[in-house]
Length: 165
Image (cartoon, rainbow, N blue to C red; front, side):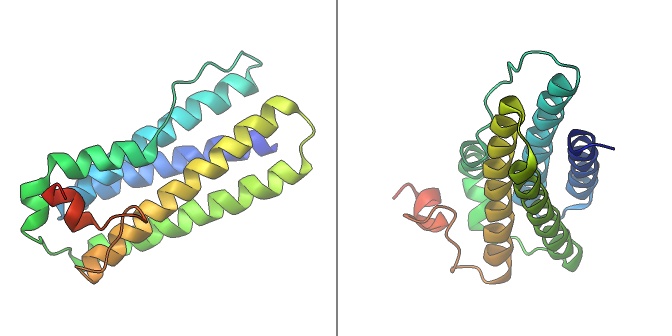
């Protein structure tokens, strides 16, 4: 199995896990986050599949941070209620962070070995997006664990974002 086939399997596994986790998630914001990131991973599958088939890459742009910000903005009232996450929710976030970090590590290792320009472009993009996914899962985990100490974006706390400040 070559690197792109492994990447395809990793992304498929992520879609399956994130979709299943979303169905079990008690926290509504977490549920929507897992579904949004599963959609990102489906886009990754589409891009990798196109490259494996030798087709031209014409993927739609994936903007994980923008997608998650939209989720939280649409859930202002629910977020302000500080809905507690279950221990299963928290475990799902831990597994998600581990999966995303393993993806980043794999893509970096593969990038260092590839000589094909199209694959280099793809891998650099996947590294960036998986790092964003990791950051979102990590920040959400911290928010749910230690409400009030969470910063989704470095320049503004989630509370200010939710309250429109």
